[in-house]
Length: 95
Image (cartoon, rainbow, N blue to C red; front, top):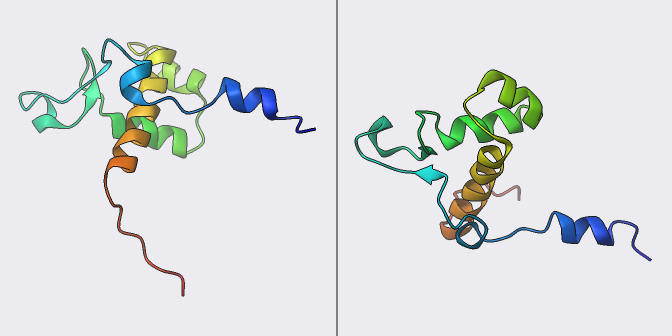
């Protein structure tokens, strides 16, 4: 029996468009030259995802950016996952 089976369902990836009916991520050419940002802010998605990659917790990110919510952080991560799955990312081969 897989002890993580219940957790996998709880944290399963949901496509961005289905999980966020009202988009929290916007790309407007008048704001940050069209860089995808959290709605109502000038905080790029890449900044939020980068902070997660650096090991910061959601709580720490929210302390640094009090105008964000936990849902904004989740939406940033979901947007980044959807963006990567839609395009080919150049990676170096290890062989």
